[in-house]
Length: 318
Ligand SMILES: C[C@H]1O[C@H](OP(=O)(O)OP(=O)(O)OC[C@H]2O[C@@H](n3cnc4c(=O)[nH]c(N)nc43)[C@H](O)[C@@H]2O)[C@@H](O)[C@@H](O)C1=O
Image 1: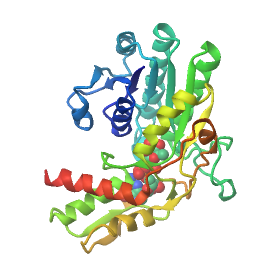
Image 2 (image 1 turned 90 degrees about the vertical axis):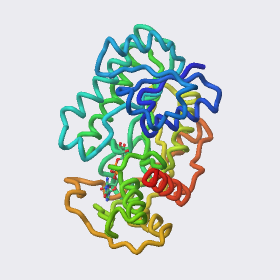
Image 3 (image 1 turned 45 degrees about the vertical axis):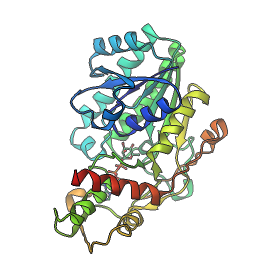
Image 4 (image 1 turned 60 degrees about the horizontal axis):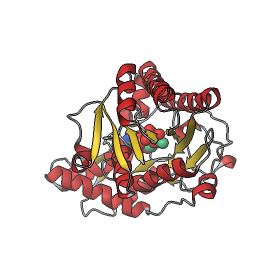
């Protein structure tokens, strides 16, 4: 089987590439900037890269024609919530155009391949307490431009499924983290600051935003497995939560990270880390995915945080 990952050099893309290779698939994918391949450097002998900006229709057509994939995992996106407020039009345009170019290329050159679209729990936005853990049938009440772009991507997928019969499955991934997570996201920001404090590079003050928000945390390696299973076993035209079913406050996750260090650290709220809107609590019901695939999360948050902190310790001292 030939798998093709958009955003293969990204955080989730790199773990998905490892997982699919271990599963015996031929793996290729798109990178926008060939100089930023840190996450997949160790995989370069085993994968094929296509230098392709998905906003460039001709480049996407070429990549799909060359790769001839059986499975496409569409992960590439502008995925940072705070910058989606600053660059709302670019976020919407980017996530809309990249996916439309991809689906047009598939429709023209590879109509029988299966496509997974990476959606997000952010699509649910504001969730009422009695709706938790949220099911796929819950209404979307988006709270930021990124969420709107992900809802749009899901709708485009549905439209191509209905209009042209493309085999498209959408997953709504809840908050996932682990080694290689970008430092602008909460757990990596905290872990990096701790590693810097431990090595004397930073004063013992850790800056935080809204610690009361509750999120459904997953390990990226569990998410990679869910993506593969979803594409193999789930129904086209449907959306599936990838979630743990439980929520945990950012304060609790910070507590796990702090329990892994001997450093004495002060916590300070930094106003720039607070958002115009932030869902109070989100957790997802993953029974729809489980019933199709048997998937359930396996890696405990304590393990994920230990691996993440060790990732930053190694990166900072290298
Ligand atoms: C599912 C979803 O998951 C990710 O989006 P995100 O949830 O915005 O991720 P984050 O790690 O930036 O924030 C998580 C929570 O943590 C709070 N928070 C507290 N203190 C800090 C802080 O210091 N930094 C940050 N970044 N957040 C903080 C913040 O207010 C929010 O409530 C993306 O993968 C996205 O693509 C996606 O789809």
